Length: 252
Image: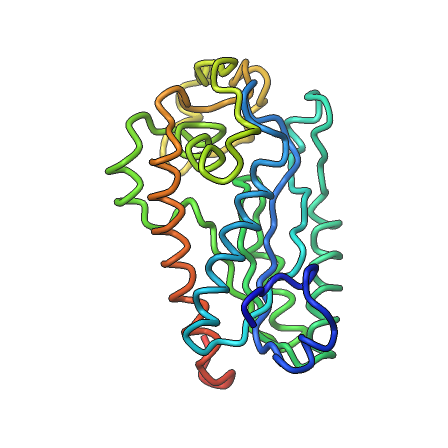
């Protein structure tokens, strides 16, 4: 099936294709500095999933891509206009219903392509895999090909930074207003020891990141975004193909 996006194909096409693996892109709706759209995470997840599945299908896989979940865990950003927060219990209920639906259709391999750092799926996936007897793989795309990304990105960050800005400049350049971007500065915690390895507490986002960004985006380019998108989509595609073509009883 040339187009793996479920929302764009017909029931007849899906009947003939008989997908055996489903990709669930999962993003967020949140502020991304002053220059990127609120849907940045969701756009990235959907685009990477579509391209990776298409490449895998061209090599014999039977993969479909579900509509992206556009909301994530954003509890520390609720003071920012139009940022939408899903409680963990809500996300668990959504994921459980999606998995149960797919299982009824004999699709027992599911990949969550996550695009938002605030989303934490491990406890949910452990529970659902035990309950439903399915295979669920979680991919945080920005953690993949990290060395390659470091070779391209000049100023590291982790939100609305050079990496994310470059990707959206590649995917949807008409939505990027780089001239309006803030510097993406991060203010340190009052207690320095809270930032040491092995210690974690949520960032009060608007206080620690005044323009909502984390990392200076102003050296971003569409060419950087294209190179990174192509490399990560290829990496995702390789794993999708392997998971799809490996018998369920041999996974993980």
